[in-house]
Image 1 (cartoon, rainbow, N blue to C red):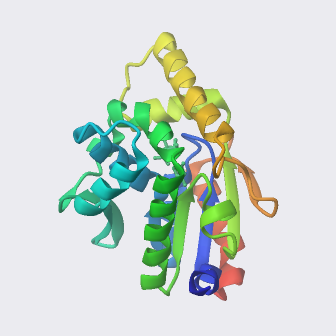
Image 2 (image 1 turned 180 degrees about the horizontal axis):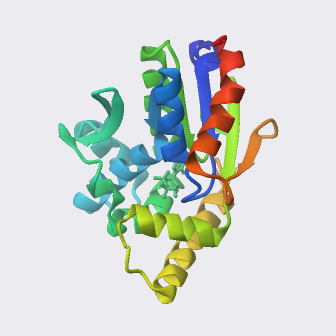
Image 3 (image 1 turned 90 degrees about the vertical axis):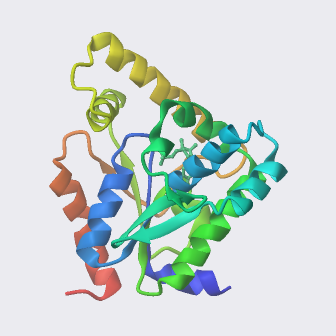
Length: 232
Ligand code: CDP
């Protein structure tokens, strides 16, 4: 299969919510001059369309709507953003409504097949290579990825990072506890679903980022990737 060959230029970064996959993948891609593909953003854009059209969890209609509303990832000045109906939906896909529903949508096999097809096509269109992040990039979407990374961090650290990312600077202890519960619920849903559950590939490089500075986790992936990509 063609995408199997192309996957030799893919770096897969998987892990639970808030482990730093997307920011790490973006920085690694910039340093190695590869495309960055955020598979979670695609699931979120599909969820947005499902919510807008009030489709509930009807997987056939959700995929039809994803096609008819042109859901996809588009290159915006060198970085891929989620699009719906020609609009950049990067911000709105991070809303609490979408976050609360996305794991249910991502559990639908027809939706997963559709997302996987979109990502494989994007990689086919970018033969220079890509860093893709998500939950099943190294296990299902690109099992032949040249490098697979599984990022983790403690639940508390992930909740604190998410609060910071969302600009919730005044969040108190209760707020962090609520965020931790929401993250844990999503992790449990993602790890226990029947299709493509969140799990590390057997050959993945595990990096616990709890105690690492952002630059250190990026460097750990870049250093491992360079010789595999033939970069000095
Ligand atoms: O950024 P965060 O870690 O909160 O999540 P995300 O990467 O935006 O992914 C949102 C949701 O999409 C996840 O909780 C999963 O339910 C789903 N997802 C998935 O099932 N498989 C992927 N490859 C990527 C995301």
